[in-house]
Length: 379
Image (cartoon, rainbow, N blue to C red; front, side, top):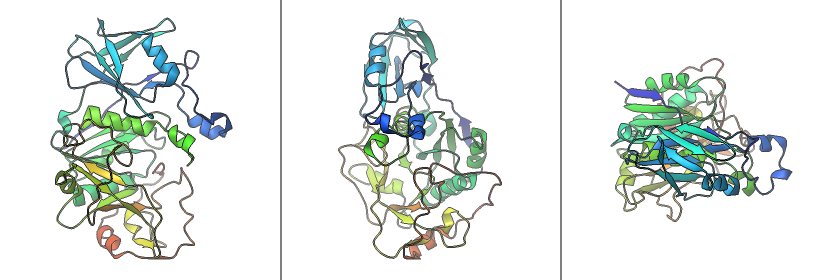
């Protein structure tokens, strides 16, 4: 029987009247929608036990000057026992606080400061749920449920995915229970967690200042690594509009496990929908007839291998060169998106041709009927 659950994050959001995050460079020139998307107030996305007695982690957006100063002048305790903290962040777009105490398995973090005092529940680790499993994870918002289903099914059937960690970023057209219903119907899936993540994703845009102010994905990567997947056999990160592929008879997990680095780089390329076909993954069997535009890679790794302890990032691991292998990559399905980031439909002037590989891999997929009223976003 499949093991499933909706897992809450134990987060902490500070009231604006007390404290707000330092503003990024260029903020004053942003439009109103970009300003509204900036996370001013989240201190922690999640507070959880590490799996080592007496040590917990608090993961959130970057502290910057104001929040760092607040924590340094606060008194911390775990279940009433004095606690000490140290920042062990490896990224400028996320913070990791390691908090230690004599309490073995604490359930409550208390923070006392002259400005305010509050307590945060400490969540349990879920490392044992994913031990030894090849696991896929991603962040999604309002993606059509058919898309989620076909994405999950593809990776279970072609790459041997056994478990999924799926963050739901404040979807407003369905609840987390709808996602659990979808994943419960995937044959071959052994366990999964659907995790509500009700935070600001960050401002849309391609300039460096706005990109650097999108904190959520980096924070969730750290939570995934530290709370869920340290003991997994393999970890694959693919967005809902991305489908990993490789040579017949092997998987991305096999390739990562067999490499010296315990890491596989997956180069991507756009695939475009067949004209007139329903906007599903299986329709994306066309490619550019000329040279495709460059695309950042994705990855698969062995969390207990040579990269153990290093932060995971969207397109790789800092300091590690790309580790591609012949015939492994991913299809980036152009119209599996609401174009929240930019208008993806602006490709009609491109010269396209049928891609035999995409046709072979995607056409056999069994598409499910469109679920009336379901939208799609943030791919």
